[in-house]
Amino acid sequence: MSAMSERSYALVLFFGMLFFYVGTAPGRIPETYATENLDSARGFVEHGSLRVPQSWSGGRPSYARHGALEACLDVPFVLAANLVRPGDPQAQEWLVSLIPSLFTALLIAILYRWCRDLGASRRRSLAVSLTAAGATILWPYTAIGLEPVMSGSVLAAGYSICAFRRRGGIAWTLTAGLASALAVGTKETGLLALPALGLLFAETWSARADRRWWVWPLFTAPIAASLWLFYVTRHEAYVAILGGSLSKTMAASGWQMLFGVWGQLASPNKGLVFYAPAAILALAGWPDLHRRAGPVARFVLVLALCTILGVGTLFFWADETWGPRYDHVLVAPLLLGLAAVEIGPARRRIWPSAWALTAAAGAYVALVGVLFWYGHLGGAMQRAHANELSRIVYDPAWNPIEFHSHLLEYRLGLAGPAFRPPGRWWFAGPALDSFSIVDAARFEPLILYEGGPPWRGGRVVPGARRLHLLALLAGIALTGGVVASAVRARSRPRPASPEPNPGPARLLASAGADDSRGSRRE
Image (cartoon, one colour):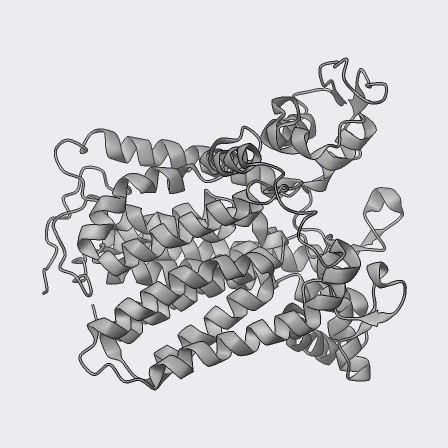
């Protein structure tokens, strides 16, 4: 299989996932920080300045709370919307709302290429990519802006660094630097990826025979510029919202930090084990990944440790959004372990079944996360006087998966409209015995609202539903064609780079097939 055809295959997968995500996207921006970015982008297009009045700035012109980089990313989409429907805020919002879908589709395509470069067969690589695409929190987060941009940028930076090791040249180094700059400049947690990216680049540079010194400025200069821009444009919000100190955000004790670290993995409400179970299963493949591609395995390990430990130092290591928000960046890198795992005789019977079960569980959790907006649970907790952070992250009575499952059952006519949390004597206010979920039980995707949701007087923008449905059908057709091609093909695994391919691997999609024709290269 030639390099060009392999790139074409990844390109078809990218467009298939892009159309699929667009088809299931809500077509609007519900988050406050995302609307701030959009307002800043509109201000730049209309007045030439990213500084616009913000809710937290007392009406004074200011940058968005997460800095100017994300707003700059919105500017081309606002300009594109103005070409089609000049000055239409709904069109601008719709197009900007597709940025998470774009970056998530890019992440899936890069994950596929990286799996192939690790020596996995086409079907194994496709199985890993589709598991990430539809059976983890990546799918629900196509409705949320910052995390897909940061996660896609981190994966693109890591892949570009590995490509620089194989091919050298200025382009891959500069791409790695620009992608890293976008990752660290999007939000604060992007800084936690810098140690892993720096280590991977250092190992890559030392492994090359030329070791040219000038590649380091190409890699670090964009990162330094992004950090400077982030500081300059974020400082005002940092002072206004946090008082210029991180003390309000940090855990109060070492025990809280320990619980935060553990909660990211196994909390009943926010644990990665429930929202991306295949990523946890992939940890079993880390030793095989280390033997096959040591620098990549160390990159994944350092990224996971820095992210989990760094986020664990925060008092709010999770919030009301879907699943472990700050661990979104870990999902795709962890799944590289599935591409490298060796399925020997001891694992031959249990491994495909374990992968299928975790993928099925993750697909259901992702589906109920896509069908309904995560903010519905927050509203229900407010009405029950239970909207406290500790209950959001730990209390199983307010489990998002269970709540969304109840919404789905009601929408399908399998359950009544009453949601009854068990009474608790420690509620600060009177606990409601039950309350209706009718206002919350609405399918969110495939609908573009104008003036708010329909039950608040809004209406569906004409043509938006049709466009989303057409995109969904196109995505299913393209992705189905990719899957059909992979099932029919008997392609050989690509040789791993830079470490040799250690042995055979069996695919999830064909548990009975023997993928033992892998080539080896020193």
